[in-house]
Image 1 (cartoon, rainbow, N blue to C red):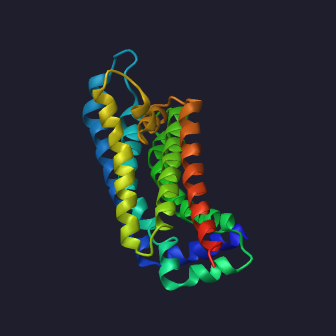
Image 2: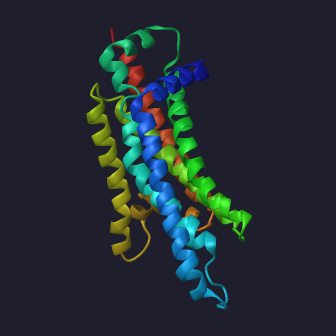
Image 3: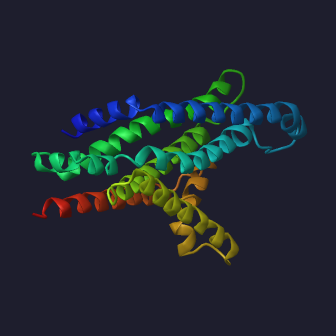
Length: 250
């Protein structure tokens, strides 16, 4: 049943002009950033680093900055794609019909999460294929590339889970988008406060971006992966609890 709901939601997403517009615009922006980074590497950075021991390679100077830019773009894009997941169902009245059916609340939430992650995963994959194309003519650090891609996918999942939960709190998609962006921006900015402090602490651990930065540099720590999995489980659990509490009301 989860896959049925995911398929229904995915068809709804792809029938929306908003999803296609976001895919087209983000692909264009990512391609432009990739070409700018590649041009800078070819004309300026590679000649400057020539002959230097342990000089950064094309993965550090092209792939890592591209993944960093993609994280920032996803901060803006994900709230737009998640804002209608449940709030639109609530506004149209179809959520009540869905809740009265024999479908479990967890299946509803996980199905919608799986659908939006399929769309966002395709977007992340396109971003990852851009630097991977360089492996044809140069030496790409595939381990660092894979770690960065995994970090971007985990970050996207965390954004989507938070957006889905906040979409369950309101019947207004715009309100869901604004609150999701505000929450994610706050969790992003916490890292700035951590940088100003004397050292890493709870604020840096809470930051949604600091764990991604480790992965984008090729540093794979279990704690970073666990953070994103815990983040997703928390917000998906809150979404299930929210819909369950409504379902029990007369």
